[in-house]
Length: 350
Image (cartoon, rainbow, N blue to C red; front, side, top):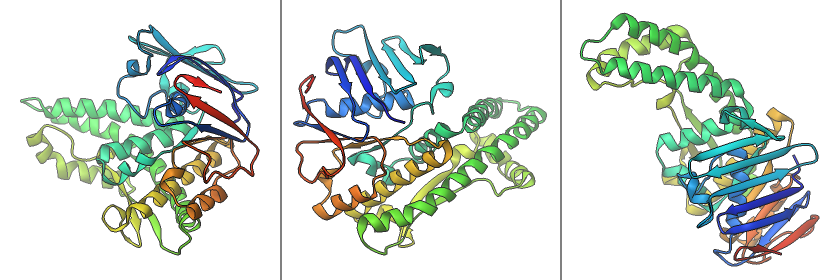
């Protein structure tokens, strides 16, 4: 995927912005707070339909404006997101896409950012959210099964909260959930199997060491229908007391391992940073493998956190995909690749 143009209207601090992007490396240089990250955010919204910086879409609308618009185009595809205070609309090649699940995956980006370290210490729910978004980019079936599972989970929880529980209906609900659980966990297992094939070597290249890095997937499913039924039966009485389901993909988690210990407590900040970059690189490879198209690579002020040697290793690892990176200056940026430099000032890009 190569984007030729990016257009912003009343998005964050940009009243009007029209960028012609280089097919290889695009460098956004400017002081902190100038709006560099806003440009990367707009591209992530075009990809995932939501921001990585705010919970409410209306926060992305420029002050005193009625709406924000983000548009981008390649040679044969056009993407547009219209953000209004009442909601947002998605468009692909001029056609309104009513469901976000039908839109996600048409434009894929991988974002590297300093606060990716949150994944080590955040809640399992937040880690699952990252997992679900990344698999959902390449598998419509995964999104479908996940949405159906969560609807059934709501039904099950509603049954568990009743004063007199309909055991027969609960059995039927769990039996329908069973196939969704198997489908979800199959795709998650495949996802982590692929990532573990990539992340170890990527980390070694980035860090210049032989230290071992891996991801441990803590699945709820042991692989067979009868195993799942056994878990349902085993948890039934406690679930009836608590009023909510204790077993299923909504309770799963994963963790990063460093030298066979939990990276969250064993790895240094610098090592965690390299693990996260290796993780994002593995996600890039996963999407490329599944879609046969190269995601757009975004690096938000990542170089400021690295010494010169690690910067060189990062550039050596980066795939030959269209890349946009931000920084306060050009120090440490490999300019041997074909590139275009943009100077970013408050609300303006030159």
